[in-house]
Length: 85
Image (cartoon, rainbow, N blue to C red; front, side, top):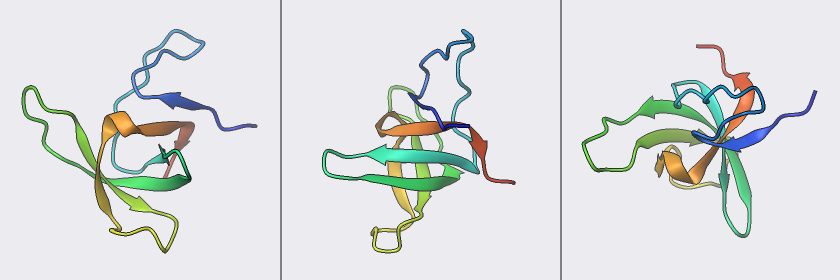
């Protein structure tokens, strides 16, 4: 089966809203030059009016800093997969 990448909060074909990121979820960071896969290791406290932030441990060993604090809006969840908690 193929992995499906959807922006967070986008409705899937079943019409259900994707759940927010949790610890253990697999994500992809899309950049204009490269894509990096990682795992959410911590969810930062969200304050009113601020973007949601998560700590991500990247699979690529040369990605620095690792883990890094990322905006959830800049990440795409890998649908149907998560690391065992």
